[in-house]
Structures are given as structure tokens and as C-alpha cells.
Amino acid sequence: MNKNKNEKAELLIKTYPKATSVIKKWLTKEMTSAIDSSYDLPKNFEEDMRSSDVINDMLVFIIDTNPHALFEVFDENRVYIHIIADHPDDIPLFSYEILLQDSSVTPLPDWYRNRKEAEAEGMIAGYKLLNSQL
Image (cartoon, rainbow, N blue to C red; front, side):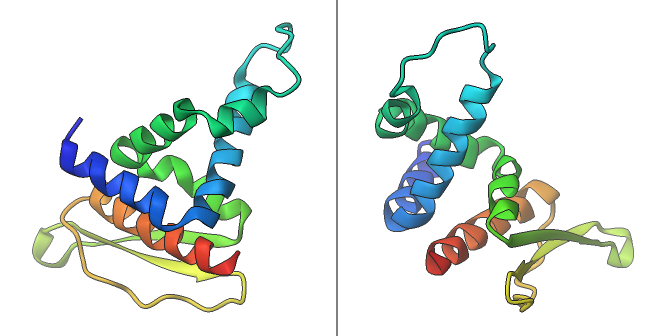
């Protein structure tokens, strides 16, 4: 994993603690729901996972490798990230806009050369907006 990306993810997690708490709770819930129900999980499993480094490490990994995976938690909190594609001069470009629960829309930021970069930047903007709404 790229150390620079890893540091950016860790900074995002530390800088926006309210959003991080909501996202860790969502991630823990997703993880425990994926575990076969025949396993008898300890009573405090979800709480222990949220406070452990395992969830933090998973969140850093997701931010670094698949930021789109967090769009679901943003949707659940009414921060809707929309990826936009355009192809002027047959060159594909991508951007994002964010629709908030009050129906306001963020202005389009820069254009990016690939979807993943636009998703990463949209996720960062969504993270910040989620934090400010909490």
C-alpha cells in the first residue's frame, strides 16, 4: 500500500472524528452481518471491534483502495455522491457532485482523468460534509 495514501486516509480519519465514528459503526455492522449467524458472537463484539485497530485498519484500506465502498454509508446519512462523466474531444473525464439532505448541491469541483480518482475525491468531500452535519 502506498504510504502517502495511507497517511492521507489516517489524517482524514483523525481530522473528522464524528464522521469516522458513524462510518466505523456502519463498517462493524456490515462486517458482523456478513458473519454466518450460526456463530455465537460475544455480546460486546461490535463495540470491541469499533474500538480496536482492526476496524481502523480496514477503514484505511477501504479509503485507499475502494473509496466507492463508503458511498452506502453516505447514502444512509443523506449525503449523496454522484459521479459525472463527460468526454470532450473523446477524452473521458470524471467529476462528482453531492446532493445534501437539504436538497442543496455542491458545485462541480475539478475534472479527473479516471472514475476512481473522482470517487476518491468525492468520498473525501462526503466525509467532510457528513462530519459537519453531525
